[in-house]
Image (cartoon, rainbow, N blue to C red; front, side, top):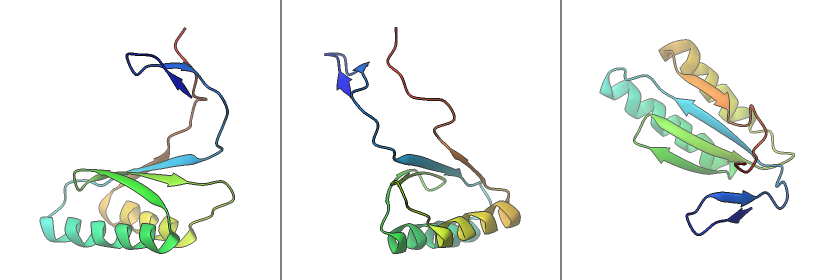
Length: 99
């Protein structure tokens, strides 16, 4: 991807085929949130994935091509079922430069 002087996307040079998995955990009691965050971080590390946290409730995870982090998906589904967490693939629409 090529950026302008204002750090805006000018051109998509090529696709990396990576996907971004995002998760938002609700604001439950602090103990549950701490435990859930630790479980998710452990699974991200175990799968060898890169991630970026925004606070302790929202994470974006880089999922390279041909990677299936099953244990991470299982941990995330437990948070969805048990605490009302939300997750989504961030590539619902193709990325493109502004026109």
